[in-house]
Image (cartoon, rainbow, N blue to C red; front, side, top):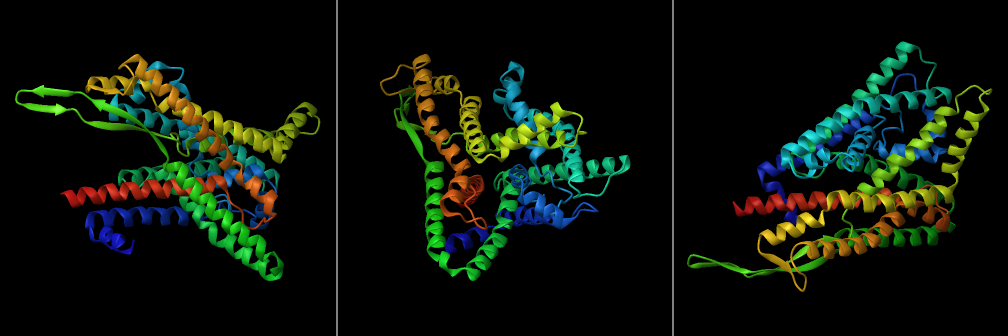
Length: 425
């Protein structure tokens, strides 16, 4: 492993790309340390620790909500805008054609619409969050000018992170948006370990519990890697073609269908959806006491999310549904069957064309069932671990583990592909 790292660092161009991406991640963490003026850190800490909803929002912001920084919304509005655009492809065929059939130019135009949608979504989320924090006395009373200034600052922070993510992605060293979330998750690990060590110092009788927790953590990470890399190979045979004096084709290969075709996207989608009821409930809670109906709706939404069983069930269901949805958007069996047929290939025992598409559709449905169940289980893993071990200072964040493992695997693959390219040249 050390020799491989030395080999990577010897390639000047690749070394510059890696250090450039690392520098942007450090820049993000510096921005996350710049707080909004007037915030009360103690009151903010109490408020975040008592709310599961804002704990999710903090994860989504890459840990930038911990000290109410100028980038406290993180890349949430951008991801929400991307989700809306993905949903619109199911309604408007032209958007789907732009995203899937118009090549790189169409995807760039599609992504540009997502960026434009980020600004109004960011303004709405910033206003709602500022109102909630003001009512909770985390922020001082804001004037109209204070609201406008804070909203513009926070949305500018989101656009800044979106720009950093684009710069990272251009270097082909992992996905920039995922790397930003990854940096926020990893930055919180030292403080969690420190809190656990302090609690262990006060009560050493919990040593067996911590050892069991460490063993479960290793098994969970190994399981995430195994499921993330698992795939079903569909055998494909290409017919031999004779052109002039040369023969082409006649080879046997396979079509890899990943068990987790959607990656970490369904969990991110589910977090985005589950954040809205909590945000609406907290926003409605500031209504005057005379509006009893509004307060009933607010109490219902807040209570529903604070109930661990209801929250876990809704979260699991959303992840499961979005796994099927995103797989259906990104994986087109008919297009793959047509492409295989054009190149003179066929699946063994299956006729080319429509029957091949139906065969691939059946396979992807079956393996997505397993992948969706796995993602849902990973999403609610923190609830299971806390109930089993009763350790509050250190827990296995299923979403965090999946994001970290997925980002590391994807980054390693992209670096290795570039190493292979340089070695070939």
